[in-house]
Image 1 (cartoon, rainbow, N blue to C red):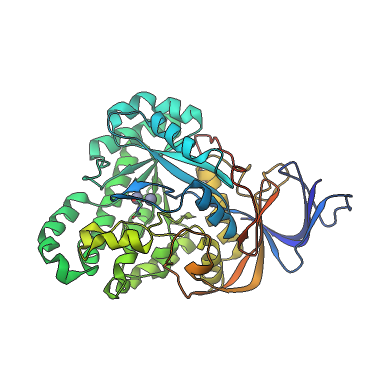
Image 2: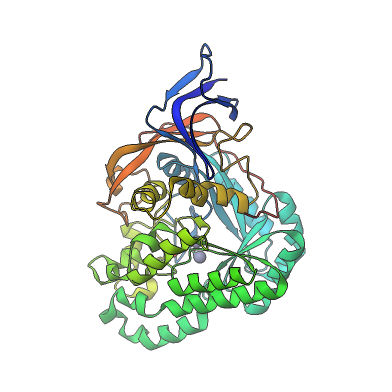
Length: 459
Ligand code: URP
Ligand code: ZN
Ligand code: ZN
């Protein structure tokens, strides 16, 4: 063993117990009540701390060209930010360009990421041209990418998938074990509302974003995607779910036996649409948008009742300069916000701390379920002999006031500015190597590796 974490409380999705954890060459080698001393081994004192699998954020967009600019956290800094916040693996998206192959997008993303990432990462494919994607669907899965995002919106971006395309892709997943991640919003309804309210853009300000994407636009799209998954026996995952009505649709689909899983994000649990009325309301522009606070309550319940299975962040960082591109017109806001660095402290403080769920359930939502659903369990997502030593030693007593000024992200603002969290990473390890201490990055760019994943992932 080259590293021993001593006297901590190990927390997995299923268990909580006192143990030492021994690591050798990046993997967990032994777990026991007391491990013997090993000369030369690094010893991490975890007395009074939790030893948990590092977070796996399966929804990030690093250096994404989007809305006329490029998201500000790149693969190097995005993975560093994750490490500082207790996240040891990210999954980004390789979005196909029209008329081109998904593999071309994958190669492009790997060129940006390999040699620069500070922790491990993987990629989802992004399908924007099914005619091209269909031919390589199985081979991309074989390559180690068994999950694909499809968009029911973003017509002007050229990313939108129509129902027929969605139906065909879901049908294909029933045969090859891939999973389709759907961004569910009804584009036609949104376009109609944009035509209606667009002329009043300057008077409405950022509030225009709220009134042109009402909650039914998400719920309807979710119910439609579920219907297609039901008819095809396809494997569906709703990304960044933001509405209570959408959550009700997911619950109903699951009750009918549809393989539909859902993800929500800290911003949909903790923030609400009132922010659009403030001076800097445009900063919070994201798709789907922040909702009325009733939705937050319903989504916390979804995490509790197990209709929502994953917390991810949809990190897509735009700083104040980039957000200023809106010039008072809500239709021009670059959509997205930072998140990967604050997910774990927020979920611990407000999820566990406010009694929405247990710490085991937090591990399930942020590590075990992402690893299971996306084909990398038990190498990732748990503390077990043989698993990768992607570990966060969690200090439940550390109090931090979140502020962009003290975070690793390249963003100069935080949606959670001033939030007081209790519970923060003490040390983060990526495959046995210490990469962050007390919220500061101490690892190395290029340490992370691309992770190949298996199809058929399920809970
Ligand atoms: O506004 C967002 N969420 N930007 C990132 C792209 C997406 O739809 O996830
Ligand atoms: Zn999306
Ligand atoms: Zn996204």
